[in-house]
Image (cartoon, rainbow, N blue to C red; front, side):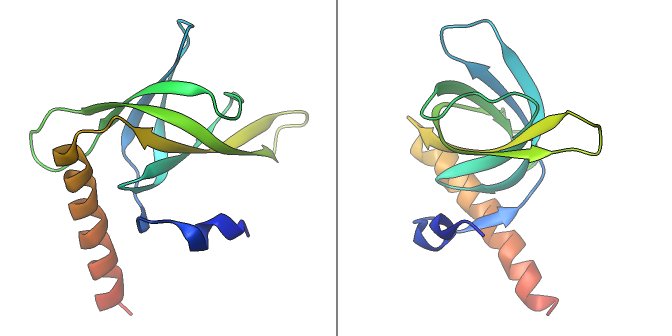
Length: 124
């Protein structure tokens, strides 16, 4: 397991939400779901290797009422290439750190993560 998980400033929770990733300086846009999320960033599984330290623009759709999606920048901070069941096909487990996120959006994510973690603790 990746050792960086123990050095995170923000807790993460397994949470699937729609996200749109646009690689900067290109017209390429990827729509997918998050694997996990925290106030500092997200993990997504995608078919493309965006490139380490690549800048991206993000639109994150948190299901917490009828609030609009969050928009911010991001930086790809890690990428792990994984094989799929389809021969010769790969997916990329990708960690993206949030940049230029509004404090109120970071708070929204923190609230969702806290609720998920509380729920998990209660079910144990």
